[in-house]
Length: 144
Length: 144
DNA sequence: ATGTTTGCAAACCTTTTGCAAGCAC
DNA sequence: GTGCTTGCAAAAGGTTTGCAAACAT
Image (cartoon, rainbow over all chains, first blue to last red; front, side):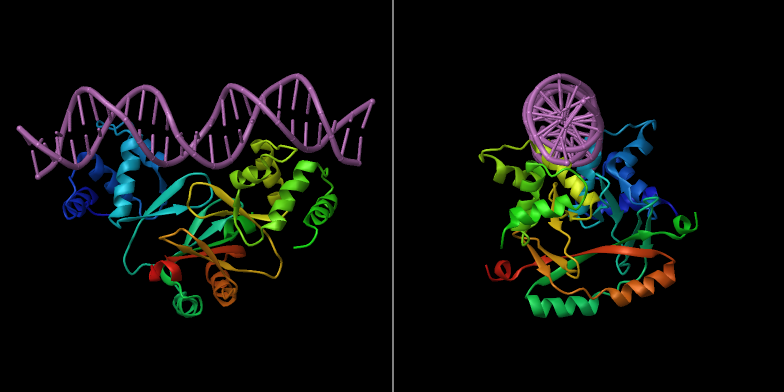
């Protein structure tokens, strides 16, 4: 986990945008929760009650900025709210979404390279990214 | 395209749910637009001005029903509204989404079978479906 | 006749926006 | 000091809900 606060401030300093406490705290939370897919509301709930409150609008604006800066990814799991995850280089993965418990699990590997090549040629479409989600039943729910 | 109206009524009759003019008309529109990905609003706009108006709420309720009946798929292209497409058996495909014009194109083939098998074994996750979206720039927009 | 379905309007929920006050540089 | 950033509250936009009237069976 390490010193996420420091790491967050450094990342922001490199962007040229102002390093505000709010932005740093929001990014810090994302760094502390790389294993989750946080929504704006969830981040808000964590911050709520801390000394320096942050408005929900500010969180949305920060997340929008982080997305532009290519620091995070906006995800949609169909639950009516956007979720965000840090964009880690060389760590492409996909999501397994359980239809019973709605849990989200990650698949470490990315095996779409050949498929992308084929599509680029065949459809004349310059691919820059992809989202792959698998739906099904997770181990726990199968057993239950 | 054929007689979509008749087809729609037959499909509904087979479900046990009541065949109302509203449901039939909504399904008819979906059958007439298999090449598009319609939103509730778009369906509403088509119906608006016809003799029998349909409330937007009714459209949402019909789409929800059709989804439960496994007649349609709910899709999310990240444009802030849900989109729907008929679920055609033996016609798996993926979507190419252009970042410039926001157009959505379809990739006919489904080459994820091997990948799914591997994931099922490795992650003990019973896969029932998937969504694969590629982002990039379409032919038109590259040329422009 | 009866329970289902509809339309309307209001409610809901997430996200965005306007603007004056506050802060980083 | 200056312009970017924040917080608040209000607005926006898509979707859902309650309820009385209308409809399919």
